[in-house]
Length: 83
Image (cartoon, rainbow, N blue to C red; front, side, top):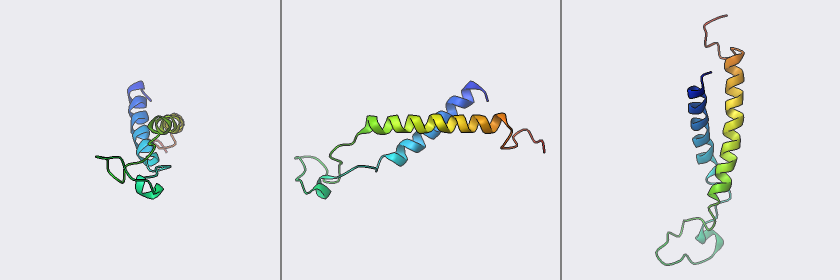
């Protein structure tokens, strides 16, 4: 697998993992029973923890790239057309 393909696979897996992790641990003002600050949406999360979720997405993407690299290196996905 070329480095460019590795980076592309990493970015795709990172974004998928990041968007999948966004709703976890998010509690809105209305769910917490607190009044939202003026000018804010009542559904906005109290603590978004984006850096924490981005770190988990990076770890998941790194593992995903290793799995894809292993699959390509062992021809698990039959990319070369061999039987």
